[in-house]
Structure formats: C-alpha cells, structure tokens
Length: 77
Image (spheres, rainbow, N blue to C red):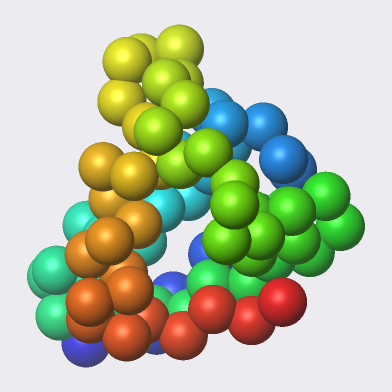
C-alpha cells in the first residue's frame, strides 16, 4: 500500500473533477489518500458550491466526491 497526497489549488471544475477522480481511484485500490485544498482550491470547501457543474469531459466533481466523503478520506483546507 502506498500513500498519496492530492493538492487542489484551482477553483476550476476540470481540475477539481480530476483531483476527486484520481483520489477515488487511488483509495479504491486500498492506498492511503489525503487531499488538500490550497489557494483558490479552498473554494471547493464551500458547502453551497455546485458539484454538479460538468467538466470538459462530461463528468463532474459530484461523480467522485460522495465516495470520498463516505469513505472519510481526509481533506485539509
């Protein structure tokens, strides 16, 4: 098992979607995962943020983020 840290520093929906997707995949393979929101990425900690906004590839942060919450993946702000 390996340890992974994902850092989200942008408010961009594409960056957030990929960050959450990679964190979900990594965690589902039984690796230890931590996520940090820094700089403009802290805007994703706002509970009123639209997690259903589509990325350029058609998926959205909400496709992956609920898994991270349910599995209590640590998120630092």
